[in-house]
Image 1 (cartoon, rainbow, N blue to C red):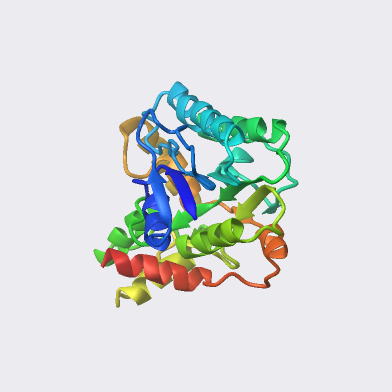
Image 2: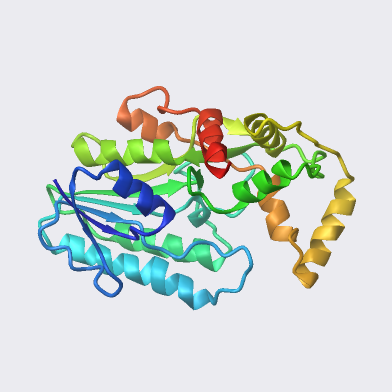
Length: 293
């Protein structure tokens, strides 16, 4: 099987190359992302990630997440390639959400990142899929795994240094997406012809609170979890100062660490004909944390 991939140097792209190293893979180069002649499968992973420091210009998101996706998808439609898989994000639907996020929820992204992802989705869906081709738009929540960079690494550093977790007063539930489950799903989509084209949310089966995540990190690193409950009002005030003074804790990071964000994975599991994904949220997170040690 010949596979064409963009974004091979990123976190998900690197994992893909490790999992599909026995396949014939053509890795795209910058400016050459639409040269997919001869490929049977197109995996479009290149994109501009959400910048928590808010230093990126809005136009950068649209140039990469929207326009590049359109370019790669047009190239796919013009060739004999049979399968197109692209990574979108749950943030294409909502930046914050109460309840369970499903594929039927009306999209209303607020950030340039989410809006750029939604525009790419809308362009793909506006084109009729030619007979014999399959197109999958995947919306993962926070992806984690060995090599992961981001808030999980931040939490790991905090626990490993025996620094108390000060946000114990915030009780939340959120979904995560193990890189192993993501790779399993991509493999199924490539190899099986019975899975309908469309948009699919991706998440592990279980949700976890940030306090539970701190406990998992502590257990994995043989530390004692130190969770303290400082008044939410005080924490929110500190976060607002963080916006102005560029402190490690700002309002956006506080939201990410304490918000409820539950993502349904029922549609993809039903389409795959399975009751559970291969790896649990806890086991996947333990594997991620072990890679930090």
